View 1 (tube, rainbow, N blue to C red):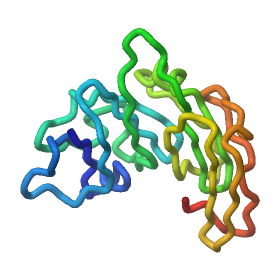
View 2 (view 1 turned 180 degrees about the horizontal axis):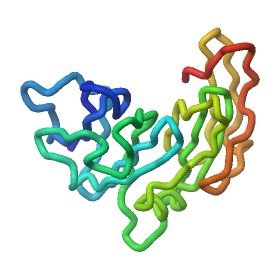
View 3 (view 1 turned 45 degrees about the horizontal axis):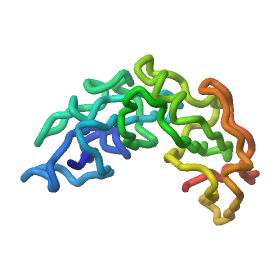
Length: 187
């Protein structure tokens, strides 16, 4: 099955609606902003730009249709979704791996996926943000990889993922890249 966020006013990858479709999108569906491989034994995690997370069982998503993210999970209507990913539900065993986060102002953070899974029903804050910052990107990782941060004005930095130690959910990140003026991390 495919979990897709449609471009219809303010959410999943910029769209705001989420649903599932077996292999292909139904006729008349909007252009997806994100398509994620999943099955009904997976959970969909949505992370807002303000650093809050929610978890939705893929089986709870409308099949062949879509619904706004605020009707599916615990985020607010005004929330813009910064990242979406899926993970297989734990069958008594903790999930393995990490979630790597980056903010627009250059902070990075790594959290244990098991910690997020354990707290996601309560819609936790996953990163403490400075007043003028927002979550720009997040993705899952098995560990041992590299992180590259690119800014709007062109500078890029690359470093080992393991240089960022895993932290608790409410903690802030560490400096990943120094920015000049109003520059922002874009990817």
